[in-house]
Image (cartoon, rainbow, N blue to C red; front, side):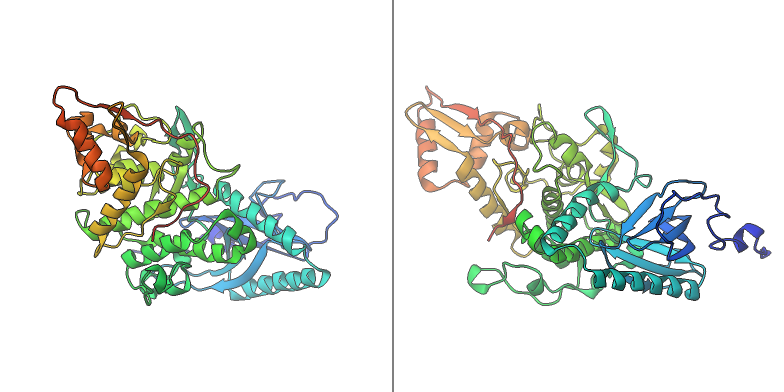
Length: 476
């Protein structure tokens, strides 16, 4: 093929100033300390040429022909400024120089025409940051609250608007909220880099029965560590030490590089991997719930919109649960809060449906409501069976009650919603399945009720809970 020479438009790329881009900045009395034409990353494959202006207290970005900034970064929010040189395979814009401006909740990626332009602008930002430190930044307690507001805002600003199509929820089109969007895929470590669990999980003391592992060098072990780290947080701990949560946000971004094509959907390893990711996303979403935990009116949007980007695709809580984890199991019957079905438009996600069909998942998969356990297991394929049995027993011990005098057995609501997971939908099939995971005393009561063949006991379902957890903890 014949090579083409650069066009006039290409020679002007990342050159010029606000006038060339047709920009009329908003009028203000602040002095511009530095300015440059940059390409700002909206997502990996979409960069927009903008005019960037540095002021004493902020950085503003203007899209072409605009009069108001499309994004503003306060210098009080900026944590670091660094150059980035991705490998040739990962570089999104070969031939240009990249700069990263980090805030607690998001990294802003800027492309410059060359290293000289990037380095000069970087030095001006660092000088402005140094000057702001000299004048004294906001007080620590106010600063921590400010950062927490930023984490909450992350649920909106990192939603992948434009990259991912909206999702249907309650007959409305809602924007997906991408919670692992702090860093772009070209700026994350590979899974081979490892992540030492002992340095990230709080529940690692041997006397608590949690094994301390060394560096993790594969996806399954990495996700185990990710869930352990997620469950070490509470809303209170985020406010006191947000830096740890920033490290967690960066770690979740590594899920973007997980290869979905390499997953064996019939293996125990993949089963544990997906369940751990689901619980990690649930904990992540609960921690960042704006206005507190969801309720029966908002849980539908909460589960359909809270998403992780994984391996070049995007998955919500509802899609992970209904299309992948439960993809080959029965459909819900009259699902109500907290049980949320994925929208019909998400049927294509069943391509990733796990091959395992196990009724115990109804009791292990946490719904986030107060009728679920406040803890979740970190599943490991080597001990998965014992973990599933223990979690099932723990859930049923709280949810199954027997009144011998009234001849009534009360079982969890989920046994009604997914009744056909236990047979033909008969409640007695559900009781029969649950029996093996109950303590001896409860087993004897149930068996006693069934010995009288002429007077079968009545089986009732618990009412679903309208209240939700603020965060989850590890099941030890």
